[in-house]
Length: 213
Ligand SMILES: N[C@@H](CCC(=O)N[C@@H](CS)C(=O)NCC(=O)O)C(=O)O
Image (tube, rainbow, N blue to C red; front, side, top):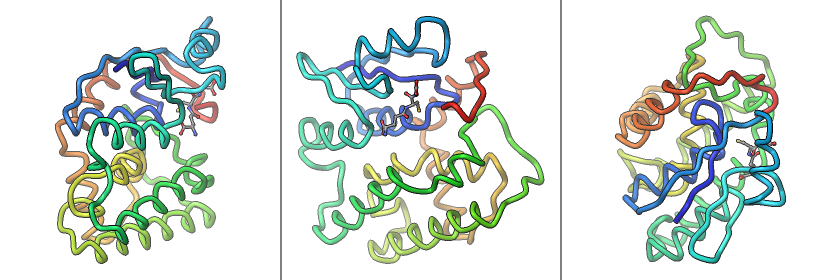
């Protein structure tokens, strides 16, 4: 498999698919395209006419969009283990990922992912606080329903991969969370795959105007 991604430092959607593949120790090759550099848009369109990363290539098949990629990986390479085994938890986890896919615009805009940076005394607007409150509610509910002391739905799942960039954001901008969720963030950040991603981000030197990513 080949996964086409953007900059490790900025590309939150790329991180989701990459993390799932790494966490489940699947073999793949990464093709990194530095976003918003001369020729990069054409290069991406060569893989995906929609012009976005991540893109997964598996033999002759191309899958684009992070959620479709994670679904495909789970179905084709993990025997469904990308999702919780329990049907009700699976439905909840899928809803959580769909919500991440379509929501939290204020948070995404005001706290762009930038793995290399930590921000002190960040001022949180009312709109961003609303997104944070919803994330707190959602994560707490997932942990409660699954009776998990590990990841959102027990074992690491697509939902954790989907919310990993939120973990990077909340910790990078110093957002305070309830102790249980703080511990969850620390567990995600401690994953060797997350540490590897952070190291790769630190090795990059490109700077992007963050509203664009
Ligand atoms: N919904 C898409 C979003 C993908 C996306 O917005 N990717 C950004 C990088 S994180 C991108 O390719 N930006 C390049 C551009 O818009 O030209 C997904 O989940 O894969």
